[in-house]
Length: 105
Image (cartoon, rainbow, N blue to C red):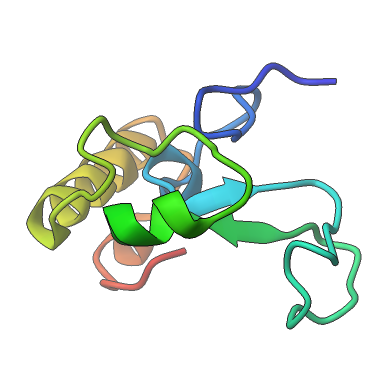
């Protein structure tokens, strides 16, 4: 079993932008009761973070938010995603064209 950070994502391996700047907890397994609308697959689940403090407090399971403020601004997230992608390009783990596509991986 891999070590995880406060947001529930694993620390091992190459941290692609969706893991370096997560919008939720990525699991290697499926949690169907937590995500009833998710299709049955073998790729794991994404349990999204609450977008607002009210939404977070309404959830039965409390998980650490990705930041102390619980809600990061879009500009801050975009800058963090860009930095994560550029770091992977610098280490030759991501192509520059993929970094500039503007899509979240």
